[in-house]
Amino acid sequence: MKIFLDTADFNEIEQVKHVIDGLTTNPSLMNKAVESLRGKGENINLEDYIRKILKAVKGPVSLEVNSAKYEAIVEEAKLLYDKYNKVNRNVVIKIPVSTFTGEDSVTQFESLMAIRKLKGKIPTNATLVMSVSQAVLAAKAGATYISPFVGRIDDSLKKKIGIPPDRDGYLDAELLEDIAEELVEKSINHKTTSIGSVYSVAERKHNKFHDDGIYSGVDLTEKIISVYDNYGFKTKIIAASIRNKRQVEELAVAGVDIVTVPFSVLLEMEAHYKTKEGVKKFREDAKGLKY
Ligand code: E4P
Image 1 (cartoon, protein in one colour):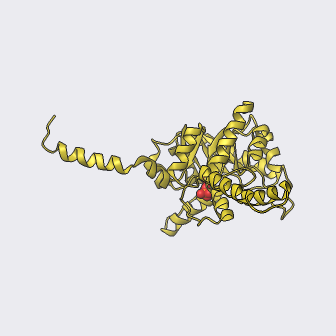
Image 2: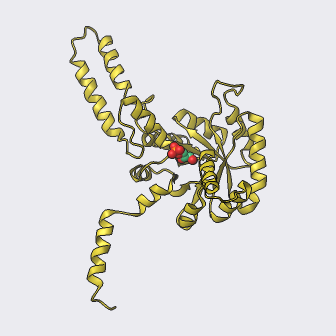
């Protein structure tokens, strides 16, 4: 499994550049990093800043397009790639799997067509993947990578179920399925008159616990891994929007290709309270020793 860092903060990159295998950025992360530096009075030139990041990272770096229409995405992807790939030969162009919102002239499939157009010329990362269907479509379009958004799926499920929105808390899909089953069993004991009405009651209760059969962001990613295995898709999976180390560990067990983690999760991954305890004891016991 490869580990990418999910940040545009150069200080964070500097601290762990020898531990990570690549980097992912997005417009929000880029904006946050640049604004924070400008806030500290630094005079930031965005193009130079991006070049500095590319030079520091050994491994693929995703840079996201802001365009939404097919031709504009292709043009922006080429522009970014031509401008920045020469710096360290590690640029990947990140494109939302769908740029359709229904609120403007952008139509469905514009970004998938762009990914197909760039196939074999420029490596792409289809981002904002929230379903198995989108993962399949992106692979068929020829995306080099896809990024399922683990944490944001958890956020929306927590909201739907009514679990308090603890941003970094792990959402346990198995526990959810157990609770849902229990509720369904109870509903079967209701005084209902037909199998049809028992089914409707049970379905209504059960539906609350998943999003079209997806019980968590980790569950979504596990299902994408299975589907890609079924059909031998070559697209690599970057589990993104990671909120805690337990998600990383579950995804590693599931065999995900890559996880991209914020700096805070990388810190969490490196430390353990029993390791701290052990180190303190060894230091104490070593005081009188000279090897
Ligand atoms: C993915 O590549 C994105 O940059 C990122 O993981 C989004 O994470 P968030 O949901 O914490 O914003």
